[in-house]
Amino acid sequence: MGLKNMHINVVIPTGIDNGATNIVGITNDIDLDVRQGNVGYLGTGFAPDMGADEFEAVLPNCAAANGGTITPSTQTKCDLQTVTMTCVGATTGAGITRQWKIANVPGGPYVNVTGGTGATTLSYTSDPFDSWYLLLCIRNNVCFWPDYRSFK
Image 1: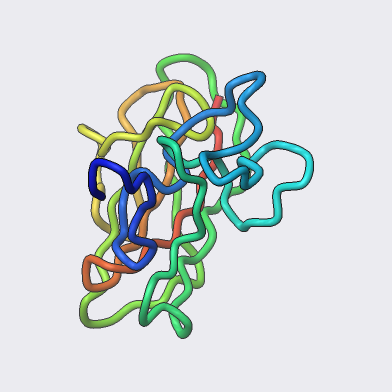
Image 2: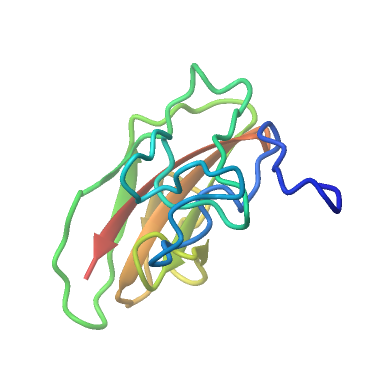
């Protein structure tokens, strides 16, 4: 990105992609592309992109992989109880790693879980907590397949 070029390289994975929240009144980016979450958005993102450019990431070598689905899809827990989540149907194999993440609100920002057991496996049991969880599957540090669940 140069001083006059506000565009993101769409083939390099970045936390900028889907890394923001909607701001009332900001409906278009620097090129007048509609931001995610606003009427007329045609992309596939689940949150607006950070910065001046709304873009569609083009992640290579991802077509045959599946990030899986977190089960159970919902749970009701009381304060200070643990949650056990499992990723079902995920592609496994060489070059694929996983990282469970946590946030205080849906959509993040997410940070790596600390505590609990299984932070980089297909099954994670939390410490007693009340939050949103995300399993981020990563292939060769390039492709990302998230699925998240709320456990309140």
